[in-house]
Length: 258
Length: 295
Image 1 (cartoon, rainbow over the protein chains, first blue to last red):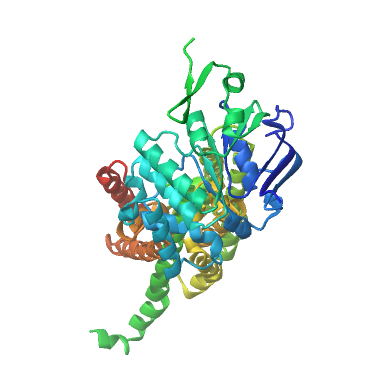
Image 2 (image 1 turned 180 degrees about the vertical axis):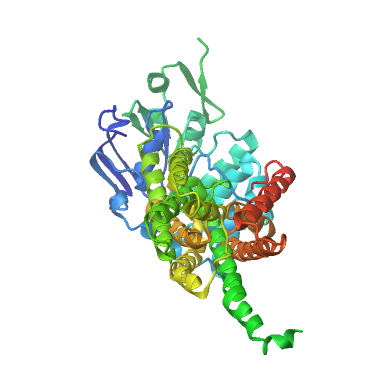
């Protein structure tokens, strides 16, 4: 069975509003990495919310691990999939370690705080993203790149088979973007399924095994990067001309000047 | 001499019947206001809120004033009425915020709270205007300024059940408060039911606050300033910061109440002391806070 299965999914915020997703169908295999691309307002984040169970489809059938996400028990869901949100308001000065420990929440009874084993898991997660030296820092004192790594570490500490990432590299400098790409590739090797949204077709072609192009809630294209990231399809999706060519074995995608 | 107390019946009565219940009530009130303020700040992810921001205090004030006006002067009526209207204030703020269609959830709640508080406070104004200036008005005014002067074992016992149950609940779930302080969607992804769990904890914090202010009157600023002190002195992690808030709240109110009792020959209303101290501490904390440090 496919790990994620969408059949004819539609969603709208309010009855009288235009749907943000219209009859989307696709299936994602376990262990693959899927990128969701599309202009602002195309329904990318909504798709993540539906997978998470945070929003409920208006029509169609959506299953993750063979179950409807919004019908799963909360703790069970938290042990199966985790979310790396795009921007997280950090109001209180938690230490990095405490923050990553929040990822242990679905594994603990509601009244129990994390124990020594959870702290080990949190430390391992921090090592995996390469910021274990920041363990005692306050999250409010971190740079944007470090914050992103802390959020990913929290999801790693959650130990889920499915990871949803909302624009994981937006606002990051090239070095930090490279770190995130390395981590996502590493997670792929360990068999974690990843679904991420992005505005960067190059990034998508670098790490994704499958690409979803969304436009105004419609599925424009779904397939391998070779199939989807073509000049015609990108231009059709973004309404702006693109050049796609191969350079040193890499797919290069740039916006053309008109 | 201290050992004379045991044999001096008047001193014994003063200590056992007046001072001791008053001290215990100050400790309990401080713990409750500190805990409730902390819980509000965590759940709204906003270091500037306390139960008073959501119509709770003004609701309680309105309820107390109404009871003073309408019912015979029995403490139980004032208590029940203020608890009822405190909860009504929270419910009204919540429902009003839900019907706003702009801004974020927090902004809507704060705005709704301001509107509800203003309505209740104009209601209090009206009640003061029509109150009997010789008997009822002084009582309303005294209540609005807050005081523990009327403490007795009976009053302490009347607030104990709700306060202790609420405090126990908040303490039991205190690690979870951290997670609920994150954005709802993130908290949801971490295996919680943010909306339901937040409501439950807000209800506990409000109910215990309402039960305390129903006997003490309004005690301003304690719920706002104490959690800040706890986060600065202890940690932001609610496992430690919540007990820290309770302890610091107890000390804060005990010190304030002692000052209220002893500073002048007559008693100064407690709310005046807590507000003055709180505002001064707040100014110190804010002027010393550095960019990017979080509050």
